Length: 298
Image (tube, rainbow, N blue to C red):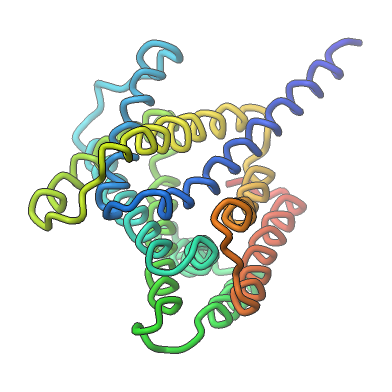
């Protein structure tokens, strides 16, 4: 008699965890405005402190295995690290050039790329509903871009945001291939570890704008709270919440970020960005509900 209420409480706790994770992920974009240093340094700090926190969590709290992998696994982790580094650098570059809203909305275009890349990667049939979703997302992107000129800061920010979405889509596909074989915390640790390792090179050779000493607490918070903690909450929630439900909630990430940017940074997105964002985010959430209703696993 007590099992049903206990299960309901556990599910409610998991829903809170996943909303908290998505809220933290959405909030991370604001650091692109808080920090004055180059996106290379922002992502280096985020991945380094994120990897460190995940290592401590895996080694001393959860007991997740972090060693004993074959060369093929290490190559997977390395490719994931490259894609993660590119994704986050482009994402923060988009926000610094334009606004939090433009960066988050154009990054949310990644389902457009996943739709057409996934059938190629996994030899799956392209579904008509997926094509409709992709077309709607494309219309949303067109609305966000004010003119076809990279001299326009909004257009340039949208361009970087779209590239961020492309690299995230590639990362999602590589993750899908690796997630069935490796624990998600292990994947997250190695992604962040290799991303941090790779970002040392552009920092050394390109010599981008370095962070000030006052930036260090924010970089630690970005890595530990808004990356490692958020990721751990998301993973823990998946033990009780279906992947489709999680994907629908994840569609709220740009909403959280844009609302926070409005209240904290006084950033008010223009009508085109709002219209495009509603189409992109609404389409993504609707597609998640449709997949859940059809019982399609991920």
